[in-house]
Amino acid sequence: MLNIVLFGPPGAGKGTQSTRLLEKYGLVHLSTGDILRAEINAGTVLGLTAKSLIDKGELVPDEVVIGMIDNKISASANKNGFIFDGFPRTTPQAKALDEVLQKKNTGITCMLALEVPEPELIVRLLERGKVSGRADDQDENTVINRIKVYNESTLPLKDFYKAQEKFAAIHGVGTVDAIFESLCEAIDGVKA
Image (cartoon, rainbow, N blue to C red):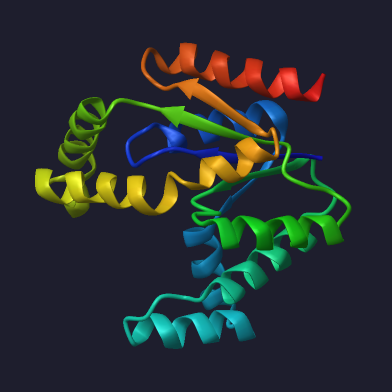
């Protein structure tokens, strides 16, 4: 199985590139936001637990999210692999994901980190805010804070995958096609 953690700050291009990678490699997209919404809509026990927490304005705990990801992986066991988007975000989440995958006789193949300078991220996010209407992409202070939170809370996760020799930095500036080629080269190099 080919299991990829697609990593990068807000505005790095993960959404754009994951769509192309899914198509090329026949993978399943695992986005925690999508999984949460699907479990809630399906009325599963985990979904109802998540909904009650969200309705109170609380974060959904790691064990609930991991349970949902485990369910999604089990439901897609005959696929070529997965792209994890937005998860894991912390080292404890990465360790829990490793445990889930090990039980299924697989593991993370690589973490592909789209690296983009902060000034470029700010420009991209503000532009996306104009086009998409997303409120969190329209205010420069909010955008700067999101990048700061990523740098403080999520960026350290790359050290976890570096220690496993599964980390690949990808230059995330250039044409969409050139960045996609760099991602494919990294994946094909790991698969070889």
